[in-house]
Image (cartoon, rainbow, N blue to C red; front, side, top):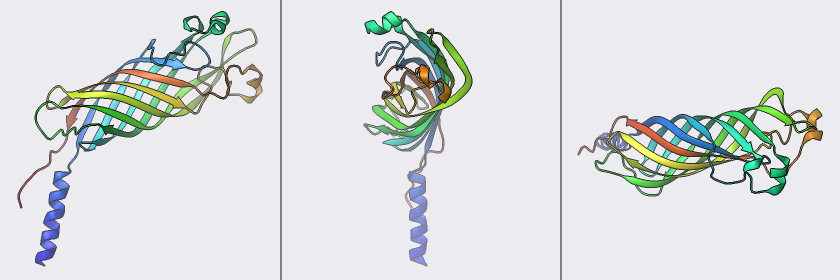
Length: 229
């Protein structure tokens, strides 16, 4: 019986010393597109991006994270360094709503239970899905709607640095590229099979887009109790 009581006390202590801190906040920044239309710069925001973010900090080194972001992706051939694209002179815009979820890894301990300023670089990856309308380029070079929509699944690859402003406010700056499993966002590959003759560009290279910006989050939740039993 005594041994059973000791085990229960130990389990209770572990549960309390691993209590989680949650974060909820906003993302504000810009987006840029990398595909078959427009510039191919890796980081060149040209449209506003914003949304919300939540985190569940499981330890000082990692947390589960989810976000929903809104932006218009824009590509302009005249802003490219490729003379062939400049001569073609296409441009497009496509609104997306992206949901992503995955795990964030801290380079250094980021223990929100300890007072004082804390700063660390971090990485985030997982899975993303972006809802977008479908377009295509007709034979005359006109950007036309297919009157349908699709989901572009992808892999987010984010690097950033975050710091505590107060005991409850965290500021972070990050750059996040999304490799998608789609080549339809800029209309270079139509979604409808009957429009496949209008495909162009490198069909072996899928679309990318990048979010660059800051997050501001508020932390809350039960702090652990380091009680001596």
